[in-house]
Image: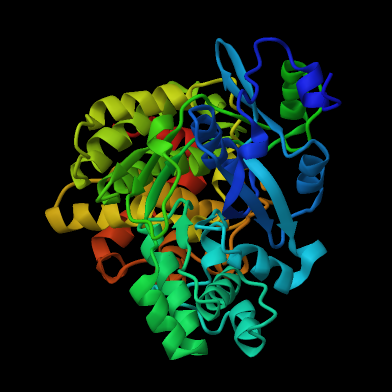
Length: 486
């Protein structure tokens, strides 16, 4: 017996670490010990360790709850992952994490020291769009309260960008090379965004530091894909039944996973390609494919599914009209805007996405996917609509998606019940999306939200179509509007 409940109670078919964990080193830090990281990057890393690698993670948490990491530490940093498919589950115990630091326990300087450690070659991040503290122009938002506070007290940083720059400065002062910053957030050109935020902040602190980072630092872009619903009481019960014991740090996810990485690192990296990752010189075709086809159709199903009374994506996909609309959105409206990555058939990719969305074992809530729409719609839908306007081609499903978002952020559903809208602009959007005619609401949202490009904001035909769709959603409801799509 190992005295570790995960190892002691797990069934024989649960995959365990078959490598010497005493030889696994903290070569990487990861900021944001969330569900996606546990189900994605750490699983790839666990597979590389099984293949003979020795790169492990030091987990860094700045604002999230400390309980999951403390529970992880109590179990020697082992945690469970259950891949849930319609025909059963596969389970593993991951050993990719070596240690952790939490802001609550260590404070800013302790976090900076842990990242600046000379053994750390790579710092990855999953902190969502908000964590990059970027403004509308793509540069650092110097009006952000966290950015202001960190620039005023650079030795006591609390924002992600402030922490990264402080750790890079410590490395420079120690005569050490920088670490690679690897963004794993679901953002287009995420490496470029991370680089811009870090260098903008560094330049505001010290021009020489910014020049050093620009010359020596590396910020590769990535495309990440795996459906990882938020954990619920039901999923924790499923996990406990499958693993044989409760695991507060455990995670349930779909079987599919994908990781495409720009191969540009300053001090080495794990051989993630041995675990199925793709290294490339150009991530853009992959990320556009995923953001528009997967995430765009996900948003369509989320807003219109929620308004139609469906709780999860799988439930929404049981409605034939929604299923057909999601597939047509991909095939007729998103694929024409894309350059296919080498070796990928976009129609086959669309069919595979439909199959993934239909997985009844993954309870991915429409409400969860609907969060932070103001941050997501530009890359998921608005850029594609601009393409269609420029080329004179129709995009009724994308337009209905945007109308569904406006209806959703108004804060009231089709039964008159309040919607718990989670969005950085929630209060502003609610004000813009309420009062007056559908055309007046559309005009206010398009002009006042700050997310619509000029090509759309100035296009009268687009706004008229958007208004017609919004009025239809109010009068007919989401299910009928989806059913009426040709």
